[in-house]
Length: 207
Ligand code: TMP
Image (cartoon, rainbow, N blue to C red; front, side, top):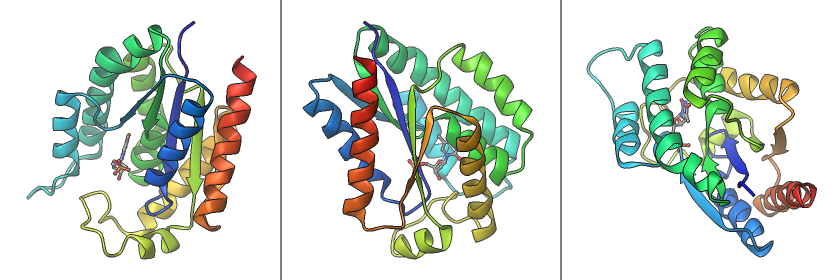
């Protein structure tokens, strides 16, 4: 049987790293063989594209150029890592995927969603996440939580950008049945318990 594809999305400072661990542990405890990866990234070429995407440049980074680089990295990652692992029966847990593109490049940058939908069909063919957990947090709270971290090009965007990104995720969650919104404003232990609960329910529904 082929594996399942689970993605985790979250606003900055929403506890994504901790909860990725929770997702993986919950699956391992259920006896599932898990492969953890991230986007942009996940292969040598895609990780090199990630570095370019997050670096500061002495020029404006065009939104469409940013979008195409995201999808170039995604294609490489899908073909060389994600698809072969799913075909071999492994479950793949990915830190961000195309829901992030809709939220950041679509709602954040204001690019037409039709561009993203077209690239999604072209690059991913029929592949979509089976389950996606979105850790939702007011960006004002999230930014305060990560204020002491060194920030990359995207993290340095204005608050308005992150508010639009959040609205993008929430709009997508209303339309897409694979997305589950988790309130990340409550204490981390409660967030993790909610994450584990959604993953356990999903596992139970697959067997
Ligand atoms: P991370 O730091 O959460 O791993 O994600 C890297 C950054 O890339 C984060 O700011 C979100 C952004 N991003 C996009 O803008 N579009 C995408 O499609 C993906 C996957 C990430």
